[in-house]
Image (cartoon, rainbow, N blue to C red; front, side, top):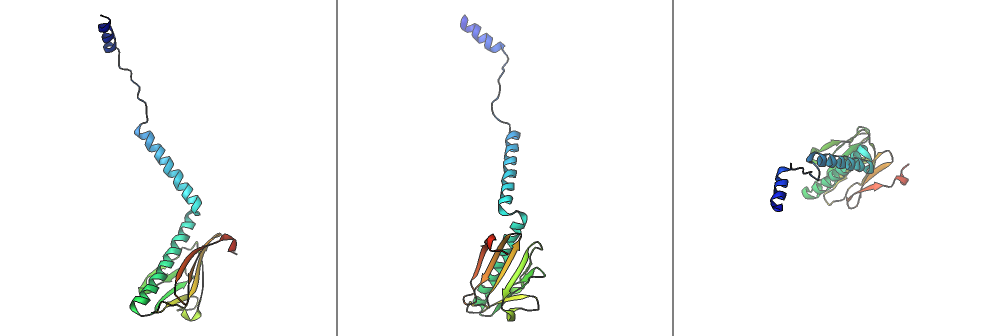
Length: 167
């Protein structure tokens, strides 16, 4: 009889269950906050938007210099890479060209005779892989990347410049 009373008590009581856990909306809000904080941290540590432009432009120019060298070796014909620091633009092998963001300062050091026009610099790559050599430096605030092209080997090196070495 007592067993029947207990069963009756359980069935007559409303099911007052409380769910423990998080809703989908709460989880999505937390994930969005984490993504936002991660993005802010990445931008802060990488030097912001200008820092990303600096790295991107430096890597693109280095890649185009390497392409010009490779093409010179593969085709057996000299290839020219020219850069206009004042105009913030460059032109590589096979009419490839690009712009450098105005927020970056551009410096070129190289052989005068490799330039195309006044104010422009140029690096000429030869069929044996050698080049006229040169240096391109892109800078924003106190951050800079330097692209060095060896004259003897034509090797293209990309390196971040130590802020203490900048003027």
